Amino acid sequence: MVHQSRAAGIDLLRVLGLVAVVAGHVWTDHGVVRSALYSWHVPLFFFLAGYFWTAGRSLRSEAIARARSLLVPYALWLLLVGTVWLAVARPDRDGPLALVAPVLGGKYASAPFSAFWFVTALCTCAVLRRLLERFPAPVRWSVAVLGVIGATVAPELVSAVPLGVGTAFPALAFLLLGETFRHVAADVRRPVVTGIGLLTGSGIALAAGVRPLDVKQADLGTPIASVVVATAICCGLVLLARAVETLLPASWQRATGRLAACGIGVVLSHALVLWLMPQDVPDVLAFLAALVLPWAAALALGRSRTAGWTVGTAPRRGRRVAAA
Image (tube, rainbow, N blue to C red; front, side, top):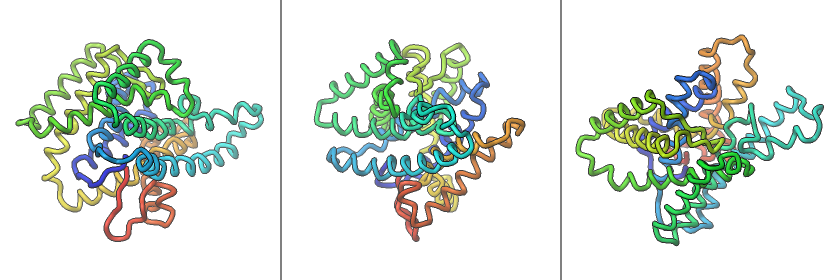
């Protein structure tokens, strides 16, 4: 997600979202955790892409920017993780078809490539939104609604498109919702109370049986209700994040900015740490390892000459040049 400036509260929210993604991959089969995290952690990043959307960029410049910040790190990490995977798992012994799944990406790529789909889906979604910029809003929303309908009626077909490209169409709804919310958020008079109310109401809805989403599988949970809950959570979190922004010390703002800026490295590498972890390691330790090790590596890479290749940013030398 490329944007012009950083907001400390939103950076903190991005960090929270990344922590939730890692936790979701550790406690995937834990019903309560899955419901609490999958209901918002992936939609949040599409929502924020819309929240920071800047009109007027050409389709070509959008594609180039997204390729640099998303696809270049994707390709490099695919090579790095794939090398480890080939050496440890030896999938070549199962025939050439076993080697195809990581290349196809999307839902076909399992651990240690579990989160790779998100990068190509986000890139596709952003380029799609830019392509639709020349059309009036009803056309953009029609494409998004058709994507949601398609995922609701035939999720297996939508998710079958390689590289997660199919999931970009229902995800476009979250991007457009984030873009819309940006225009109304400033008019919310009591953001903290409203944000807490949205999160509380969403929690009640989830407890009442509204199912979480699994965007990778184009599973939008309970029709309409799960999308509404995900949107409400994203709106609530953004309101609270912006409300606490001025309360963050300068050192915290700098720290969260650095953590958020290199987040793509965490997305693409944390599943490898979990995959290499012995089965008998407690979940809490696995979670901490999959969080701390990739983030430490991403921070270091963000300061190196390889930053553009590994985390999609320019190397930090004094002032940061950010892309998330």
